[in-house]
Image 1: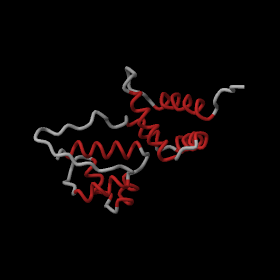
Image 2: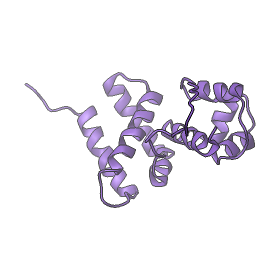
Image 3: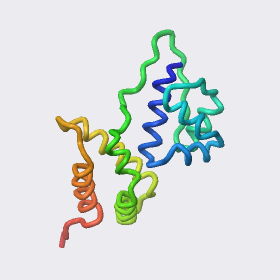
Image 4: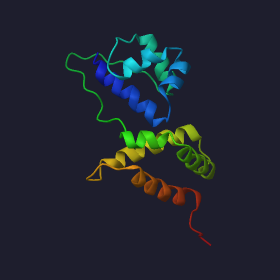
Length: 151
């Protein structure tokens, strides 16, 4: 098992959900240092611990046995600037407005937004900063919460 890949996947899922290590650890019934170490590629997690972490993050644990080198999915962790943005009260307010307008669950929408924004970062030829993320979010907010008058 490649602990670095597992840790990267855990960190990515947690960040996409806008959660802290402490909140995920609490929901999984694990210690904060244990989860932090796993995210940093240290430690040797049990299937029970991984199953509990997956459940805490709203994921399904899948185990694959191969005869070759295990390859992590192509999905990278969200950029640090996006992770910081996802933790702000302003981001949470925007998600709340968008979720209400679209009739969606806030937590699901937050995770999808972070994932979509992270994917958009790969299209831009430079690293995006907080003002860039806000411009993208403002556009999505306008589209979601204020659709054009069709009448």
